[in-house]
Image (cartoon, rainbow, N blue to C red; front, side, top):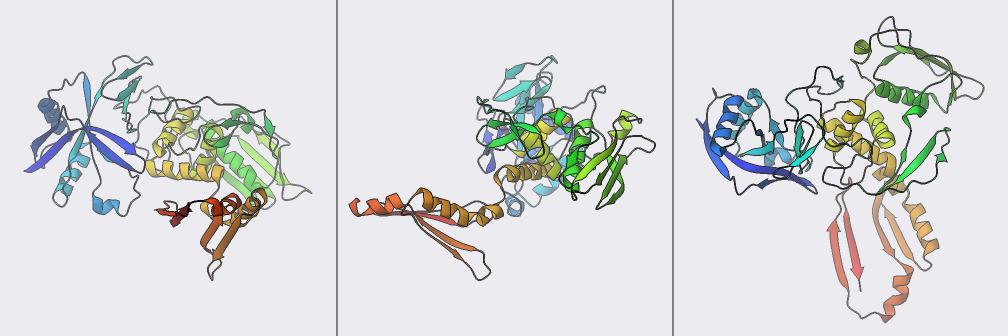
Length: 429
């Protein structure tokens, strides 16, 4: 017999880690559980001990990963939710080696299927789905049979279809109000696609879905550009393809369903390495259910480009769960947490660049800094392998004003939390 401690509250994300905020009104309970007890039995005991009506409220059980395991995982690793007896017995096994408490979240049920919102104990409700303001998404227990569902065969496809906050346009977190956006005049890229820029915390391109259509005579800078366009097209139009022939000067792709007439043929010309679309049969002769049952092209790099260009922004408050939710709402793509994490990371690199590219641009940055601020002193030091060691920077205006300052220096430092860590030291007078 195991003594399980239940605590009622809700999960919130506090900058870099997950925290469970205890509901002092409902408090905690102690239950005796054994290996014969099922998940449903446990839920019924929670309903009984907390005096909750099963027809009015839903119960969600979860627990935080032990500190020993978290040392090997990122700090933003979310809590583990228990949804069946197998997972519940797994939690009981962990109690034998670790001290864990079972977290109980209470959400109000919505009987109407219409789009509406309700608030109960900081729980947002829309349609038939509830989720806490702390950004833990609650999955529906059932999925409509007549709604088309698309599974990501590259990852765990055991998720359910969500129907909550509308992240179609910007991917805004539930707790964040929409910010007014200023749209600049359309600009034309090197590939001939007109884009418009959304001015948020980060500037990013917003493409139109209609610009993805292929056509005979289109020209792409390289074979890689054409393959990327095809991969994005398969996600938008819900199908998959395979390479029938592929070499440095020829690319033929066909629908992966045997017998389907959809195909694309592209070759190079005198302007190699540019690829020109020579043949494009856009009509599928296979069934929709057949061609949409595989999404091999949906890797995190393609999904990152798709999210950045068509769905949302990448500012710091956007979390992987928002990316997964937005792509699911817009393109019916399901993905597990870690694939959503890699997708968001790649989208941010497309907008901001990678840490490596930032270090490579230091010399250029320092040169432009000296031009804009005459008298500025900079010193960039590299190690024997030519890698970044440290950087000293003093603005010209600060150097010129130093003789007139009171001779009191304040030195402070902080640890950097990026990929390569480091320390930022400042001296102020």
